[in-house]
Image (cartoon, rainbow, N blue to C red; front, side, top):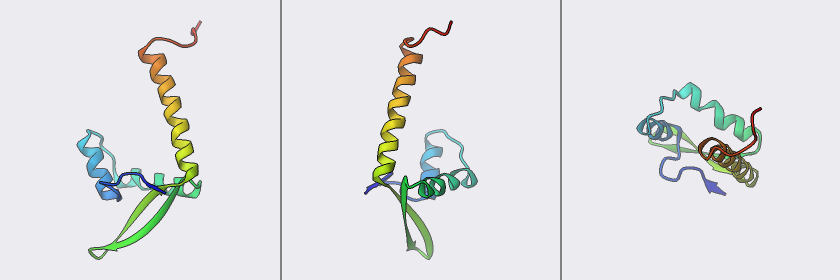
Length: 91
């Protein structure tokens, strides 16, 4: 099992990191995504009580890591087509 973001494992910290990178994401946008990914078997969740609050820690499953690799490949192909100007002729 591999933790998605070892330095920022819970939702609050993920939002802080996304904000630092210039992305404006709300809790209502962020939280449904890992729940759906968990339902599809891409993530596993561990609930921990810290400072009186329940924090949800997500880890990628084997299926999730395979899907991540598939998406990375698709993004790489898209980047290659857009940046390098290679790919199928649109005409």
